[in-house]
Image 1 (cartoon, helix red, strand yellow):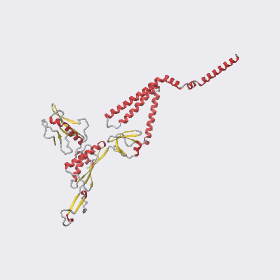
Image 2: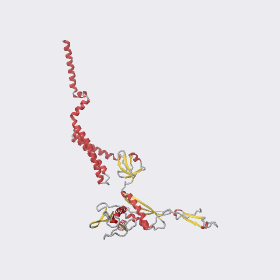
Image 3: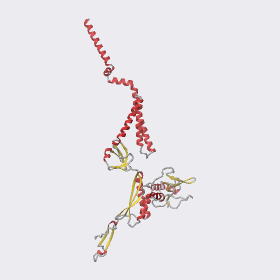
Image 4: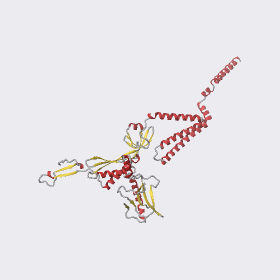
Length: 322
Length: 115
């Protein structure tokens, strides 16, 4: 009996020790010992509904936001096809709506709206501050969406600019994705950096034509065009007294958007107006002068010596025997 | 007179610069010939007379058969006018031109187009 009593006493003490240890460590020890899955199960039991609701709000909300912004972009592009800031505006709306959806989901999960508002305000202020202070150090592209540019050998319209690449559409319909670092290393020609462009109409008239009349006709033709800007006004210069032509240069300024069509129209009108006014264009010509004096006796009728005036040159009077 | 003043006089008095162009035409209705414009009043006009004349010519080609037979859809007296509703000379000839000419009494004029 004595031994049995001792064993029971020892067991009781052991149990007491364990209970005391457990009581001292508190519930953490219980959690550590609990299997992880069981813990997850308890969490899901306690907060599962809120988590599921928050997740559902987030997924559905993001889908709805995406659809809404897509619809908004289409509508704005249809209503205001010339406005350049549609994409930027839509991106801004997208960011704001995503933030709203995320906030609603967080509140549903149990976050305090006031704390959330504070967090969002801090994030916004930090982002704006970083943007303002780091902007001069961020390499910016020398063009915007919608500009017509030539980068390297690629000429086309910029459709989109992302962090990694620039999407360009050439005039024959091909789409190119050019890495931004490559563009930044190239010489870029931006045709729409300034609002207007100069049109050059160079024509050559024959030496026997009325030069002043040709100048007047060309200047009037540019002046009366609705797209040509009055300031700086159209000008016509005598560029060169060339071999076979008096070269005239017409210069006028138009808006960038009108450049190509206006240039083609003015070219067409120049040709037709000069024709109707009786002003003849010059063309390369070769005058052949037969010199009878150089012919040998008995070989009359066959030109033994001729002179060439190369390509209508008035100055080139050197005679060459052939 | 300063050069700037002289340039203003030239700008306003030398050559009038039209602000836009429209194709003017007449189409038969029950009440007679009705005048129409394309693009209509209120819409932005065409900025190019070349485009306007090309548009007028295409309208003429598209309605030519109907105009000759008097069928529905015919368009008459197709021409280009400027922003002041004044006829504008065809840049190709420097003359005023009218496609499918038809006099107000309803008789078709001689020839397919008048200058």
